[in-house]
Image 1 (cartoon, rainbow, N blue to C red):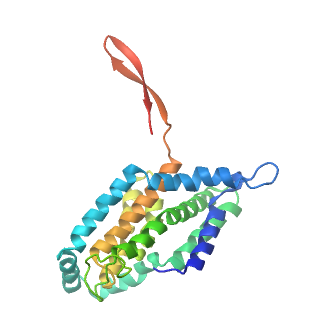
Image 2 (image 1 turned 180 degrees about the horizontal axis):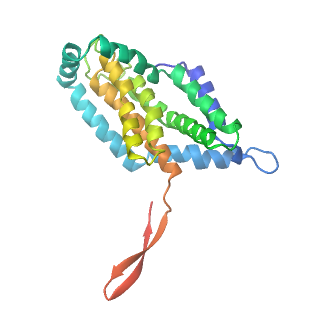
Image 3 (image 1 turned 30 degrees about the horizontal axis):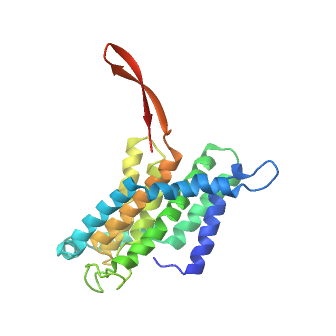
Length: 266
C-alpha cells in the first residue's frame, strides 16, 4: 500500500470535508471549521497519541519485534506455506485481499458517508453514513504512523529477504493491506453491542492480513502489526464518540454511612 503524496493530500481533504457534518454550519451559513476540527479530528489524534495508547502501541511493536528479529517469523511463514496454503486458501485470499485495497475501500467509505448525508433521516442511511465517516476518521488517524513505521522498521517481504528490522532499508515493516482490511470490520464491531456480530466482525477483520501471509507477501509480524495499528486507530476514534466526562460524581460507602465520591479523569 503506497500512495503518492499529492494523492494523499486530495484523499485526506475529501475525507475531512465528509467527516465534518452539516451541524458544523453556523446560522449565518459559514462553516465552523475551527470548532469541528478541534472537537473531532484533533480529539481522535489526541486519543491515539495519549500515553495509554502509545503504551499499547509499544507492546505491539515489542511483540512484533521479537517475531521479526528471531527465526519465529520465518518458521511461521514456512509452516503456513507448506502445511496450510492450498488452492482453496488462494481462492479465498483473492477475495479477502480486496478488503485491504485502499483504491477500493476508500471510495466505498466516501460513498457511504455521502449516502448518509443525502439519503435523508432514515436509520439505514444514518448508520451507513456514520460507519463511512468513522472509517475515514480511522484512516486519518492511522495512516501517518503506518506509513512511518513501514519505512522506519525497514523489514522486507518473505520473497525479498528476511523479516529482521533494518531501519529505512525497505518499506514493509507494517502490512498496509492488513491495516486497510481491518478498518471497516473493527469500526463496525465498535458500533454494535451484539456480541455475535461484534466477534464475527473482529474475526473478519483478520482476513485481509491472513491473505497477505497466504500470498507470501508479508510475514506474520507485519500482518499482525497492521491489524494492531488499525485496532488502536479505531479505538482512538471510538473514544471520541464515547468520551467519558472528566468529572464523575458517584455514591461511595464510608464509615457509618454513605457519602459522595468525586472522580477527576485526565
